[in-house]
Image (cartoon, rainbow, N blue to C red; front, top):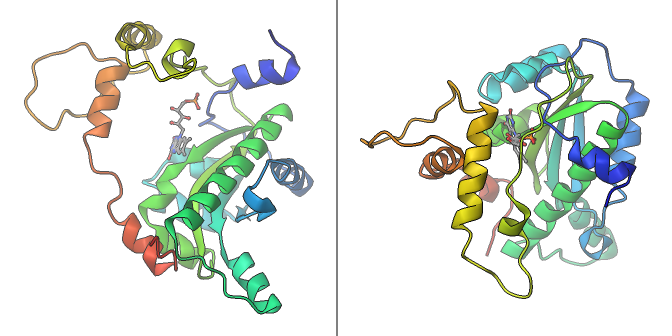
Length: 253
Ligand SMILES: Cc1cc2nc3c(=O)[nH]c(=O)nc-3n(C[C@H](O)[C@H](O)[C@H](O)COP(=O)(O)O)c2cc1C
């Protein structure tokens, strides 16, 4: 079953090479407004996005995100933030205390910002634009907070490069549907479908020359999605984030 929306979704591929043509401001407004139509917990709308077009600032972002070249190349860099500060201001005006100090508050805001940014991303693709999420923005959260003057209770969750694709993106296969779609109850017997996906990913050549180090002695093994993902998952990821969130006012009780 398909329609033009579903077809567009299946054509998604992250874009890491951009033309130098600018993206009109109006287009950015259009995609963020489309993003805003995403559902949002309690209609709280716990997100903000900062659009950066300035060359110097984008170069700074590139440096903060491990030197990823597409950040410097794309004409627009969007910083999608979990934002509890607006609600705190509203509560203040209305004479209440915003109980923002719980894990649930962080989860609410992270889900909200994830939904708006993916809605915006899809609308960008519908206009012929390309994008790439930049999780590396969480490498140096405090520097990003300073660069964008983010107030307390606003935290950068994900960056996004935006621009006109130099080439059509490569479409990466996804896990077989049966590995992610369970009927009535979770089925852990997914080995066969994971192995099939592993072989499919190897066939794309995506991992050629892009192997993650094993970090330990390991016998030569087939290097596909399973080995690649397991190696990645064996590394501690951004251990500084808890402290950075606490500093930004997210208490996570
Ligand atoms: C939250 C998030 C953070 C990501 N961070 C980065 C990043 O820092 N740099 C990058 O080049 N790609 C990043 N990606 C893109 C993923 O690598 C990409 O979506 C994934 O490999 C699947 O490829 P596809 O989007 O082309 O289908 C990120 C994706 C997500 C969802």
